[in-house]
Image 1 (tube, helix red, strand yellow):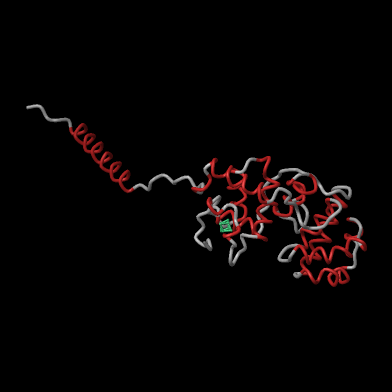
Image 2 (cartoon, protein in one colour):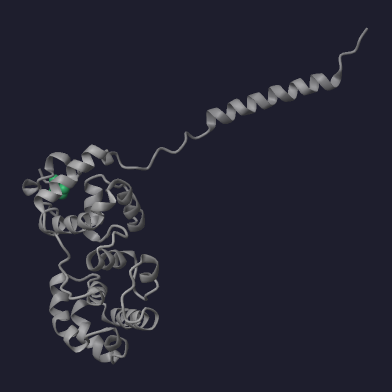
Length: 251
Ligand code: SF4
């Protein structure tokens, strides 16, 4: 009587076990991650939002007073946690006393601290202003550089400041400014579902045409100051109301 080959039987068992294991794994496996893009980013909806922003804020621009890229760099550093109105009051005299990067780079730190004190966080801001000025002077011949990579080498300068300066002073669309207004309104309009400014910027850069990056930043900031305020957005005055389904809408 022929004996069944043991090896074959054991091989069959192994195949069966492997199949069972694979089936279990498939059943227990997590579904592939859903795309993280917010539902409100349908291109037609985004185009409608952009049209409404153009209609409401055709001339939106940066509200920090400046005569050149260097002044805008300093004003933007000072604007952290401070209103543009207050910064403009301070820079009105500051830029007369310190007309260029060299003047700021070699300022007396304690004098400068006193001068920028009204903008808040004056010790850190003094370090950033003087550090950035030294960087501009020593590494870029006194001219604010024109690329994000270079501008980020300046002390106290992150992407938000880089985008403000490159976009407003040079007209270079390096990204989208994500300040407190853009953060809040991009979420309310469901253009992002992220809280981290870098991720919000990436989300917006994917759905807003590059040609609109600079203007979009200004328009959303204007909208945040005038209508879509943090505590009580004036939804009754908002021309995007029909497109907006934010949970904290006031109508
Ligand atoms: S409807 Fe209200 S919450 Fe929505 S964007 Fe307009 S002001 Fe903001």
